Amino acid sequence: MKNFINLKDIPARDLRRILNDAKKRKKKRKKLNTLDLDNDKPLKGKLIIQMYEKQSSRTRLSFHLSIAQLGGGTITIKANELHLGKGGETLADTAKILSTYGDGFMLRTDSDKKIEDFSKNLTIPTINLLSPSSHPCQVLSDIFTVEEVKKKPISKLDICWIGDCNNVLNSLIATSVKFKFNLNVACPKSYRPPKFVMDWVKKNKRKVNFFDDPKMAVKNADVIFSDKVVSLNDKVNKAKKIKDFKNYRINSSLMKKTKKNSTIFLHCLPRGNEVSEDVFLGKQSKVWQQALNRTHVQKSILLYCFGKLR
Ligand code: CP
Ligand code: NVA
Image (cartoon, rainbow, N blue to C red; front, side, top):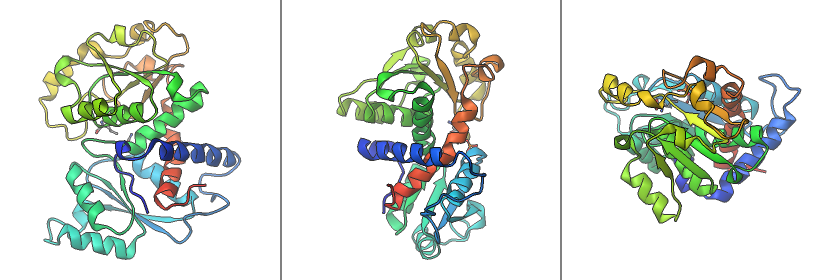
């Protein structure tokens, strides 16, 4: 049994095995309907419990499909429907109950510590559906999309992030270390990633290139990523933060600063004002393919957790 909590803690070889498995599975589903099962039904008889402490559209729906296609079942619960916290039940007791009824537990939360505490008390795999420091399922799936669209291993591509240094970027940084790709980040100086993230990069003898000017950052970009300036439950002065990022908006004029004409744009959604409508809906944008691939890659993430990767 394995957990999928932070990409930095998962060996590169295993991440690559997940991507390879997802590629094979996706190919085999070409003629199948949304709810048709994969032939081998590897999660037959398994119940995966999903818990959300904050909003989600894509993660909950794509995981519902991932689990269904693997032949398993899922139930989605909201934190305020449990005894945990409000009703006075301890996390350890809740974890014991989740492990009694379920075969896997997935959590979206505002507390990294809560995911760690659950993983220590559960006897079933734990999957991080987004935490303040990490969005691992999103980013591994995004690596899949990049390689699918560009038809090249990510290590041969120049990747650029314009915008807030948030959970999604932290996970992208982790993959830049694992898969050894060049990563440029443009953001205001005072919003750069936390020290613990950059210390880990240094410890692994890799680097991330930071730019104040987004035009410089995108020069050689094969892929430009962005995300909302103000994340869900981001406890900041929103108006100030949006103002601080006003020069980091991705519009057609910034897209034209790339030397390559095949540069693609990716965004995990939901979106805000950080990207113009014409870029988001334009030819270079692969955001819908990116959203669809969540289903495929998450299937292989589940199989990794259950020791069933082929
Ligand atoms: N990209 C993503 O995780 O979307 P949701 O918040 O809708 O799940
Ligand atoms: N950074 C965003 C990602 C949403 C999928 C957030 O945490 O809200």
